[in-house]
Image: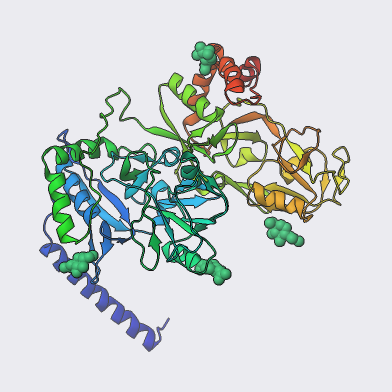
Length: 542
Ligand SMILES: *[C@@H]1O[C@H](CO)[C@@H](O)[C@H](O)[C@H]1NC(C)=O
Ligand SMILES: *[C@@H]1O[C@H](CO)[C@@H](O)[C@H](O)[C@H]1NC(C)=O
Ligand SMILES: *[C@@H]1O[C@H](CO)[C@@H](O)[C@H](O)[C@H]1NC(C)=O
Ligand SMILES: *[C@@H]1O[C@H](CO)[C@@H](O)[C@H](O)[C@H]1NC(C)=O
């Protein structure tokens, strides 16, 4: 076998290049300083490098200077706190959407934070609605919210008025200056446009698509920031963390000693001069007591909640993540002696549909969360997920446009004349229709409930098949359908160890009578019938 001459020439060059490269690499390592020997409080060597995400656009807190150096108050603060805590830390540039995103008015954690690309996002405002999605360190900066208008305030927007409904507001995706904050401030709002970034928000104001930008900024070039200040925060600006993170365990005491030594105020003074800017330092930063509970260093099991299934998991008017599933998870975890947290996450991270098959979502497969609460255990899902024992009854319904204009009859066996729609990931899918002995035609997969409703109302689809008995604006037919095997359960990644501890704890909870008590209490608390499985059923299925 002969190599072509050009081929062997290239091959030779590649070998020489790689030799040169390894030679250079060797020189680099020999000239590099040995890594600092970091020993933590327990005297154990801690080799983890903690990463802090910034996007390099937040002057004077974290920004790239003209030459590309990442500098700013947050950068200096992280270095100081890590030094005190004897932790190895680095900043990492990522887009801010890796920390947090807004989807249909809910703040969800970003991919980077959930997938643990990094450990913390400095400079994020702690707020009630973010507490359903994130943990936080103790706050280290003050914050406020303000209203920005086009120069001259052409629409005469008055921040002190309680009725904003005539104005169209905009805020940045992921911001705490959102509709929940306006609700906490008792404002009536009209249209809200979510802007992808500040340039887009500015363009919206300058071309009059929006009247007011609600943001935490005191100055925005070319626009007018009105003098009124309001608060969307729950105590200030902090490092935002993935739920269950143990970063605050070492960060908070180290930050506290920075404050106690006077070095925090010194850093603030130095930074004001160094960055020629005002820094919103606190006079006396509050501090929480370290968690000294027996379980404080155990794993926190994360249970995903979309925040869109009232009364099971939803954001109340103040923005708090509440609901029966949220309470139930805490109860069973208490019985099991496990640390658990409910975390807001888009439902498509748990499951989605592609070509009439339900697949597990990225968040569940990639360990962003340990479990997805409130999913029916259907036959087809059982090839994609594992489930705990069921705890709620599951019932599905056909919903149509008011008056059932297509004349859909749930009792027929041939549905092929009708166009169906269901939400992506739903168990009310093609496989369930087949198990019911139905023939079906076209099925459109909707990205979310508003889209499914729009499809019905604009006659693109005739029937929405879903586990919901009431959908405002649609008519749900009375026929009940059962797609599930035993009921609604906690859905986990295949092979997850969660059911091994959950099921015995749940059984204990049922046997003690507390489960039926929780169900009764919750029906009152949430003014909605919570359809729990009866005790004998839950015990039989175990
Ligand atoms: C105004 O600006 C936004 C953002 O750039 C753009 O999406 C929108 O189409 C513009 N509207 C008008 C009426 O120019
Ligand atoms: C500091 O900022 C002020 C106002 O923002 C500006 O007028 C001044 O020139 C700046 N000083 C330096 C040294 O950049
Ligand atoms: C009906 O609504 C859907 C979802 O909003 C949209 O994608 C589709 O274009 C609409 N179709 C018609 C005919 O208006
Ligand atoms: C249910 O409510 C009763 C009375 O308010 C209370 O004593 C009990 O602890 C509650 N049980 C559960 C499981 O929530």
